[in-house]
Figure 1 (cartoon, rainbow, N blue to C red):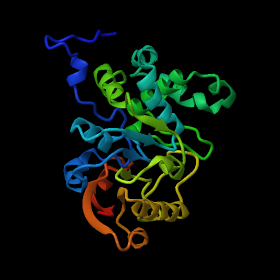
Figure 2: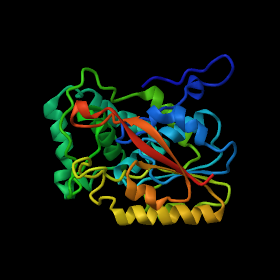
Figure 3: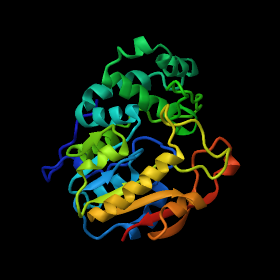
Length: 294
């Protein structure tokens, strides 16, 4: 493994490299960050992201020096385990990733690793670091960088056939570790995750988007899909946080049932390019909404 380089100023090169999202995630917000900047309050206390996914907005705000304290959460246990291992066990993670890096071009190896969760008893014996390395390897080598599971919770994305997937990006992962050093990271239902939110905090909701048509969504990121009842529960939580004095911002589909849930709040429309779709001609710009209470 490369050693951290010490610069003449006394700081390390790791400390001056801005962290970027380390996974490709459906609905990721990297493309919208320049537009999102106008929605961020000038000052806020803690930052909460209950559906963190790839964390594009979190890393963007961290790099701007806006984050004092962060609470990051997601219902995807494999993703959250990866976040925790980057923060707490990065050297062990590098060792495990090295094994996958050596086999990253092998389709046969990919399916062997992908199918490990077909034997629940055996998979349960994996360490948290082994699981984290598997999750990151699959994300970097699977088709379109999807994280998708079937109703049994089994990863089911086919091989991606990339020319040179970056399975072991040590430089960025070390920078990510620095960003996560003081973050609280949990795997809870979004309502539970927000019990620690206080007046003056900024909450950014980026939930699984409500499908705009019967064929526009795919099997979920977890074995439990996010239903319209969950969307209604989310809207109620949005209102409760508003009453508490929090800054609340939400992204979702541009579709009437969702717009109706946030009636009375500021609703703006943005055009986003869908980077993850099984059909290339359906990755063009589509409208989505940003809702804020400020």
